[in-house]
Length: 101
Image 1 (tube, helix red, strand yellow):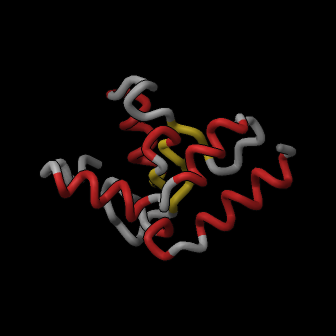
Image 2: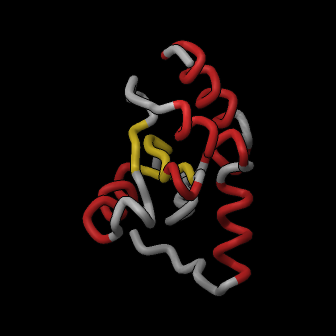
């Protein structure tokens, strides 16, 4: 998958309403700028920094949306889910929905 196609997939995912707001803090005033790849969750820069500092990459592998370095596997993980909707449903199901940033 080339860079243009990867960027198209990311832009398509960002058109989903739930993906326009950070999945972690849910602050509508913060711009979504990163993805927790293995969670298929779109997050803001503050939450991305927290994920990178506190969580291991096996829990939350964070990538900036403007990166040109996405593997086909990472893009496939995003395409397999619905992004923040699925992530937030999972977090709520296990009472893990407390924003941390």
